[in-house]
Length: 468
Image 1 (cartoon, rainbow, N blue to C red):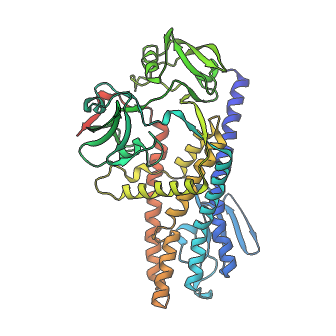
Image 2: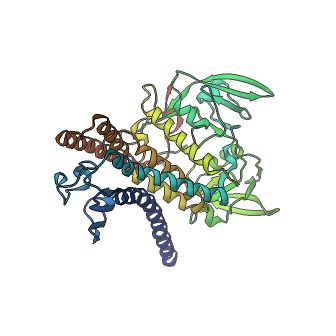
């Protein structure tokens, strides 16, 4: 790479990192601002307002409140000693709790609930922006099957290209991936020895029971989830081109429609895959339809990865041309809430393959934001993603677990019922123990977030374990 090009790549990387940090910190700031303003309104003492945890890299005291930026990018906090003992997460308090005036349970509830309320409010605000501007959606999200892996569980069960999937595991589906009403999620979420599909074929509804495979993975990778080895019907249209990728350098543009590859006519992505597999490491001559004209493009296809020789290397194209939808704010927020409830439900279901290792922490969220900002629809997709994350931040914090906002609310309700404060020593013990558990959970999911950076592709089908 020539030096000027390298400089541009470095600047692009730094700019995307800045976008990620700003947006991620906005979500934290708004949540903590809710606690801060409610505490000031209800007359509680506020000692610190912190974005991120750990030793501060910047701090300043204004009107008795220490504002700080921590060194560990894992959330934030507002130190309110009258609310609950939180030294395990927030550090030592300057004011002795016993010397501070008591706080009514109602005030504690208001202060604790304000953070989640502000997060949900920000979710509605961002959802309103998405409603007006539009949300990019790919035409690749049809429930019609466009690919069935030869010898895979779907093929063995009798699923065919052209089948329209109506339901999976007894649940209606409206898309192939993304969201808990998708084919992908319902396969993952199934718990039976086989997975029942209802498909429409030649005007008739058929029920087909399919087996599944689970990929063999190393212990440091996220546990594998069920796959049936089918894919959605995808026209060979270019939905996005990653800047700086092989496809970008070759001249591909968004909304190009591939009509031929090496002289072979292409009408569907499934017809393109064998040509790509047969020409790894070689130039491939494409013809694309762009603005009503045929445009020739030659792409130097990357060589196969020795670790995953059967997988087509990523050359920078997201398949499926993009169109815009305008879901209402209520629809977006309610869909996000439904997804979160279903994910948590799956986590606690004994027969589910969904485990804590499949959740993401701050590192995983920032990585996802980075990937979104790399696309041509960066801010539009990032704002839509932020709706989900804000709802997640609000609802997860309302869980009745000590150290979370929901835990503070639960303790305040118990205090109101008992008509006296909970024993301070017992409360400190519970809060500290739960803080340790929370820190352990965050470190656990962060381990897998980091492992994602080193996980490259999938093993060939022959290396997978079939379960029925």
